[in-house]
Length: 152
Image 1 (cartoon, rainbow, N blue to C red):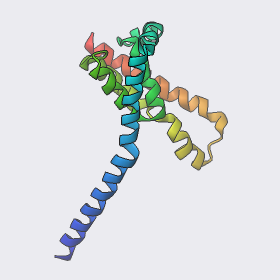
Image 2: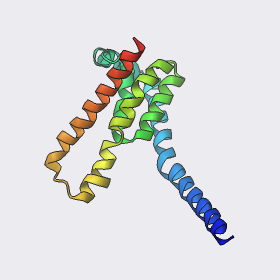
Image 3: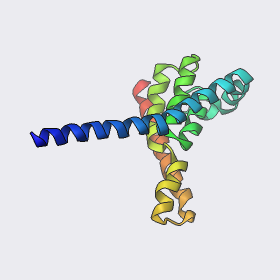
């Protein structure tokens, strides 16, 4: 009986910790990115960004505005998801586009956060950061190209 009590207590404790992570760490990033996309849309800057970045993003079969998802992702994976949701809500990205960009979100997500949380704590010299960032960006690009290939 005591093992069931411990299992229940562990479940409750884990649920409480999970709720705190979701509401205090993840949700603010997602909401901020969603608001960021809304502000870009209302100001007209999103259209300009889309036109300027269209040639690059067309390599992946995505609209130019999708670059905002990758920029948001660089700071926070949750932010990238929020930006993608914002663009989807505005009809700028389709479900196909979201499917193509999703590997990019997961393969390069939150590099700025992780530089401080992991690389800094581990004592990795900052001179190595650019190559580590490049590896993440390369992996993201390959993931998105692979997804595009599946949808051609």
